[in-house]
Length: 103
Image: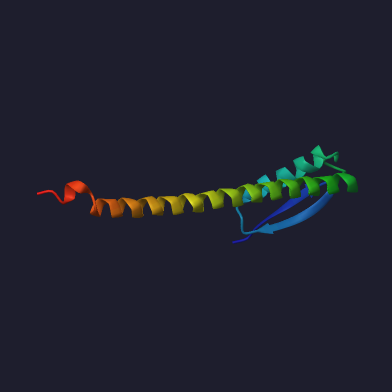
């Protein structure tokens, strides 16, 4: 079910429609407002420059977060491979343990 909300940024009204929750949409809207304000825009008016800087700021944050997520995924895959190798080694050692062959 799609959620709808009206977002006001820099004196403009935007109708948002999303399958995300209303709480998530509000969080996105607030981040957009804060970013525009941080880049020099007021809640009721922002220059093209402030909006462009806000876009660049959010794009920068996105790329850094994406990079960090990709690095974390790569590390997770490496750790999973290491764990699988350790389990294989343990299984091989259990079959060849010196105490196994003693009577």
